[in-house]
Amino acid sequence: MMKKVKHIGLIGLIGLIGLTSCAKKAQTAVPEREGTYNAQFFALDDERDTTLNGVEYHFTELVVYNPWEEGRPVLQRYYLYKEPNTPLPKDGLHVQVPVKRIATGSCTHVGFLNALNALNSICAVTDKHLVYTPLRDEVINLGDCISPDVERFVAAAPDVVFMSAYGTNDAATMRLQKAGLTVVPVMEWVENDPLGRAEWVRFFGAFLDRMEEADELYTKIEEHYIGLSELVEWSNNAFTKSILSGGSFRGTWYVPSGATYMGRLFHDAGAKYAYADDQTNGSVPLGIEQVLQSFRDADVWVGAPATTMEELREMDGKHTWFKAYETGNVYTFKARMTPTGGNDFWEGGVTEPDIILQDLIFVLYPDMMPEGYEPKYLKKLR
Image 1 (spheres, one colour):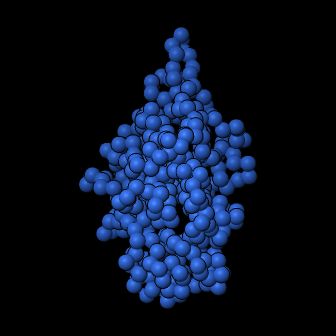
Image 2: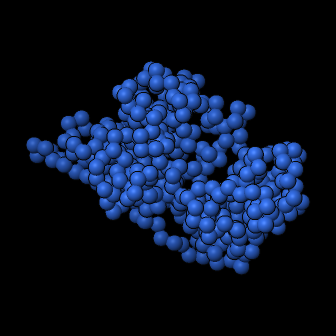
């Protein structure tokens, strides 16, 4: 099993800166998590052993938790095995690994698979035009992720289907299960901790029988992220620059609470953020008066819903009322896009929260990055 990463010293920190969806519910309550470190919605034990007729067999137990019910009961339990005759517990689904053919219902899953050099295992995806990473021509387009084409899924003949579930009895998942497919709910999108979301690379590594690679990758991500956040914390810059996020949409401006994925990234980047203490589990809808009161003088604006300053102004004239617009410190997360709408922020970014953090530190405190640093996921509007 991977060892928990310890915080690293100042010399190491300086060096780091130079680097640049539901299955049948089980009736078991959530046990104390083992085998995961930041992720809240899966647990992994890859040290299970059993013996039959004097022969020892090894298998992995993998549990997905339900975020929609109090106490986070088990949503699904899997036993992953290599040898065909492995005796396994009966309280979960049995999947032989490594899985060779994967269908997926989210571009984020492509990001995890790409990070593990497993793109060739993908046989089908939903919304193929929205995938940033180039895929083989023969990869089947399964249509819309919310209303999947079941016949196409079946025709793809996947070993497993990774789906983002959006409820205990997710309709799309249930339709695919009724068709006889092995559907694996992936709940990375519910994780509010950036490192917790990235840790789902270990979840995918278990199905691919690439746990060692996944552990090594996650260790590097965690070390780099912690190093960057500690460098900010120990500097004189922390929380001296303020940040604004999002944009006006039909009269409402949605901003992340301090408890969300982006809210935590803002904190770790040392941003002064008006909703840092808001523990709402999701975005906070605001009227323009509230936005102006909280963010009129914000130093930096990230996640703007446009790619140019003119486009931002044309979307809503109120966007020009902010200091960040006036000073030109406006950034979008659309730095890496395909002509058909694929955005690598939602794909590769899921396994690179450390790089997203690095980008945020740069736009807030550019002197903390090496000279000539170019953000990967953030792009300045011109």
